[in-house]
Length: 437
Figure 1 (cartoon, rainbow, N blue to C red):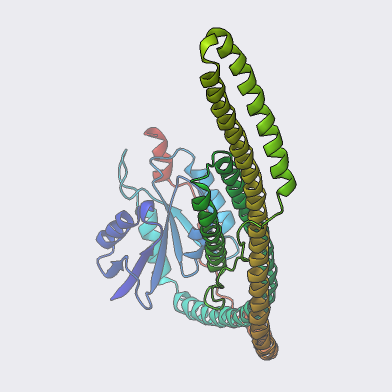
Figure 2: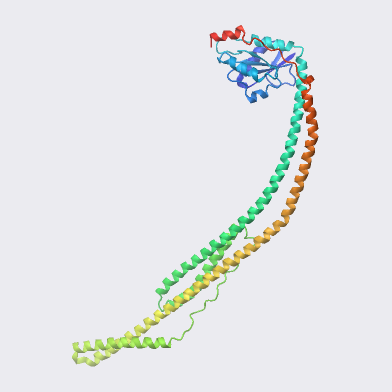
């Protein structure tokens, strides 16, 4: 049984055309699904718009084309003329039909006659054989072009991989070096900020010290400074961990120079001056108070003198003790500033030493990676050269085959005879569509 294949876009009315042809041609097997070698292929296009690029790809195996839905579109003749102009080079025959009209009657007589005429054409089998040969040659040419493009793509991919390797290594080196410099600046700033904060706290505490709290203050300052230095070390370790250097850099133990106690100083002259000033102040107060009490209580001059003497002595001791406490506070303040300065120096040294070790380890890691980088680049260069040579050989071998294929396609013997063209596109049936449009 003769097989007729109906192809085309699904929304062009392909199923309706298939059903109409199956009813009109009972001696033919009209199908929509692809078959290996149908005797006739009918392409269905809608009258709503001219052929698109995707539609033209389906026209390669078509023996006959039909424009459907002419009952819905008034300008179907313009679309038919444009489709004929698009397929003029292939000599494809076009007919108009209304297989499932919304208005009017079914108009498929021209389509069925065209199908019968095409099936009766003695050149149909020869045309299909020529078309199969041309399709095979064109497929071979496309495969050769694809292999050439694949070879070129392989070379381009290897070259891009090599460039990316070189660029990524340079970028990684500069990025990690910049990150280390930034970390050094930030850690130094944090260490100095911590020292300034401790300095302010110590000065405030020194201003409120008494003779009883001085020993606790001097004992607690070194522990506080060691905690601050440990915090700086922890920040350095955390920052190095962010840079991926923790595994290769063991944390260094924070070290703080021994602060010692207050340095003994010779205060003999200062003590004499304090005794002199305190005694003068106490003597003056005692003398003034004695005169006042003598005038108030004239009969008890001896008791008043003793009382004023005790008062003067107490004031003298108070002035001397207060002045000595102020001196101790001043000395402790200076000692605290010296301790904070030592902490700042230790923090700066710790940051510098740890970051220098990190830079050294980074340089060593870069050197280890760099030892393998030339080998990797050399391997890629070898692969690029091999792929380039293979691509050239592929192009050289394919060029001769492509020339033979092009010559074969230009051979007049592989040009299919044209299908009979319909010289009167407007039939009485199609003219009747104006009555219900």
